[in-house]
Image 1 (cartoon, rainbow, N blue to C red):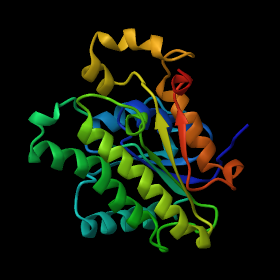
Image 2: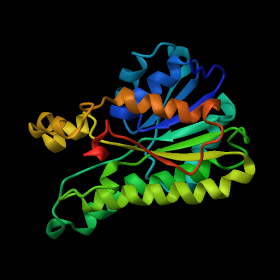
Image 3: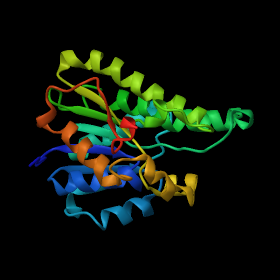
Image 4: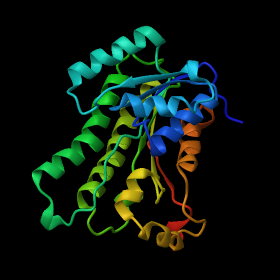
Length: 248
């Protein structure tokens, strides 16, 4: 049984889907969670479902902000809560847009939310003044979209491929400090975002998964493992969690 008593983790994109499930699970396992998203009301709704509300802190913030305000914001959080033992970056957007219709606005929004926010947050968390050092762990949510063909998802797939590459580079950079960095690539997970993206075809896609379509909690369980001391010898990996889809 994994326990995270006394640990502190920041979860970005914690207002719904995988981010919310991860924040709730870490809290249930004993960790203090700093839940981050743009909307305070959505974060408060997640907090109301937490096992330990007193250890579920909501911090509304737009992670697409430049590094200077982000660093000052995180510094203030750490001053109140203590050094971070790690983070999970779940923030992301996905839209099905054929390449012929992809414009600079779509590219900028996708890359800023999915990639630049991840890089900026990692830089702030990895500041030696903001983390506990050896034993800390960073987890980034990528996607199997970066591994498999998906018409209409060029920008999204490219952004998630960038996350996988980012993780490998950061893992090498952080290993001398004893800090681990890994990615998770979920298959299709029903969330408000994927339900909006795929609509009625979402249920039909279950046939592509030998173990059926997963849940946000399935991804949260793996993220919790990677954050825990049980994964102390795992870094630089992109772990696919897809219910066996890759077998087909």
